[in-house]
Structures are given as structure tokens and as C-alpha cells.
Amino acid sequence: MFRIGIGNDTHRLVADRPLVLGGLRIEFDRGAEGHSDGDALTHAIADAILGAMAQGDLGLHFPDNDSQWKNADSLQLLARVVWLAHERAFQVVNVDATIMLERPKLREHIDAMRDNLARTLNVDASCVSVKAKTGEGLDAVGRGEAVSAQAVVLLEPKPN
Image (cartoon, rainbow, N blue to C red):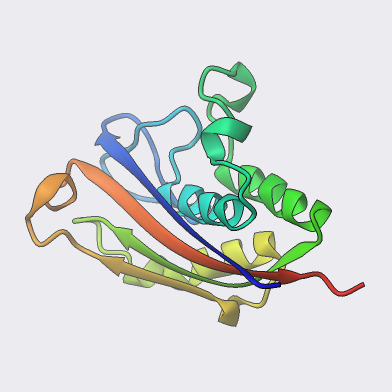
């Protein structure tokens, strides 16, 4: 049986933090505030996988009051979620994700993000779609105060 999950994540942008998206560190004067590295894209994808399996969310599996996850690499968190999916006899088919960020522009970084995510998800990069949108000056994203991401994931049963 195929399973579909939806994930989203939002982080406030603050000074003195790196901006990490899809496991890629992007030069910018602010980064995402968070207990881990604040990678909103990777968090949204992990939440989508967990949702497809009805296994809660990242906060359940990696609580922000647990010091072992402080400044954690979100690709490693995603790898643990993928392992959990494999343990439950599922594998990722494809991911469709959108990052909402006013600036910096992300077009030149998209392929590297897709490659990082594909490696972690154990799929070909052609199965990982990452798009970037601005907030058109509206809401916290549009004012440059936040980064947000949404993802949809399709899981299928692993072959025996």
C-alpha cells in the first residue's frame, strides 16, 4: 500500500546562525534559529515521511529539550527517519518540496540540495523536487524574518 505524507517547518531568521537548507550551508547574514541546525527543508521532508507512516513528527523523535540533538545535522536526522521507514518496510518513491524564503535567491543551490537529499533518501535525484519561492513581501517570510518549507512524500512498500 502506498502512503503519502505532508510536512512543513518554519524557522525565524536570526544573526549569528548559519543558513542551512537541504544539508547545504548557504552564505547569508542570517540563519535559521533552532535546536538543531534549523534546516527547514530537511525537517519538512522528515515530517512528511513520519506523517506517511503515522509516526508523529520530528519533535516526538528528536525533542528540543534533549541535548543530544543540539545543533544536530538535519541530514543525519533525516537519515534516521529513512531508517525508521525501512524498519517499517517502506521506502521513499519521491519528494516534492517548496522553500519559502525572501532572500537569498536559491536557484543556484537547488541541484546541490536535491543531490544531498537524494543520497540521504536513497533515491535518484530525479525523484527529489525542490522549488524556491519568495513571500512577495507578505507575512514573516516576505518581510525576511523567517524561512519556511513544505514537502509531500510518497512511500511504497519495500520489495522483499
